[in-house]
Image (cartoon, rainbow, N blue to C red; front, side):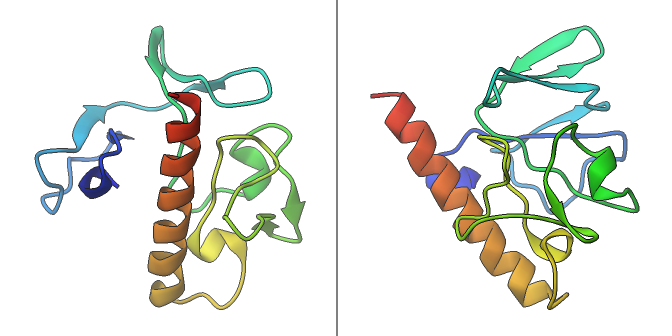
Length: 127
């Protein structure tokens, strides 16, 4: 996403991945809250507030319903539309967490679709 002009901030309690380019800001920490009324406006890292238009979460071994309150699921997967939007405005889900087939190629293509749609939504709000 940083390659198409989107400001990307990666938050993790793990070490910064070596494959990240310099355009991706890395913050060592954990998101404690997604803030917004009917759409994503910011994330909280403890007491620090970081403004955001969208949030992407990498799921390790957490039930989808434990990720974000009110998130709509279909079975064990997060429900999304064709643009990979969840029922929460500005919140996208891609890859294995959205359902079968559980394949890397699906995750990569869905990530691109979600990133391009998120960028177009951000462009609309900045005009």
